[in-house]
Image: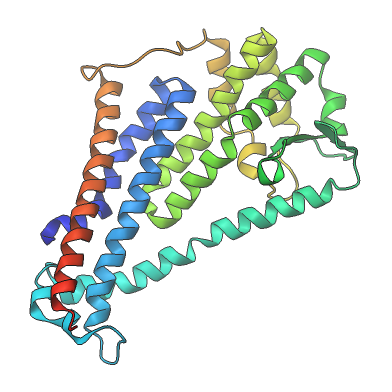
Length: 311
């Protein structure tokens, strides 16, 4: 494996400038998909890297249940500074596994959100009698149809065109399954803290994606911008953190400014000779290098452990 086993742990640093440039220069749909894919690949590779290091570190501990041959010098020689790296990977991987609680919290919030709507008619739009203004998209259960949840206070503040803009925005979230993108990048940020900038960027680009879809459906970019501003000024988020990433207004000034500007070209593909193109190629190369390094390390360690295992 050599020093390449550490590569997936640090390659996420290359995604920082990519997150910024993609959010600013790419179409929101392209940026969301690109950043989600990069975050998912890099998080999986760095977790595999920690698992490989933990195997080497755990095999050195007295009383471990692993075969004695796994602590042979041949195995330890596969990892530079094996005593330090192997043992340091153990608490790091424990912290990573603890981050999987994100999935449990997501499932719990989703269940409670559906339970709160149990007594309402099964319509696409669920209006809650609430003095606080908010709106969010609630995905369906087991692939079922999602619902738009909106408070009566928010509806009272919006004009008809602005209501259509809000509904179109939330429908875009449901149609594109933005909750999956957000869950992926949040989990990736838990698995590797270096990926947090990508999580923040996807939270913004997903909102921008929904903004552009709403503007195209309504046919009035200014109406969508006004609706976003009113939702933000009225509170814009649910009282409890039920899908807060979808209910939160996000960087409202940036979103409004983007809607007041011409629509971004949907089919633009930056070349490698531009700043954003170079960033995109860097992200792709970093994710590919991380995947190849992890695969190579896993195969090398597997053969090494196989040779050291008594039969």
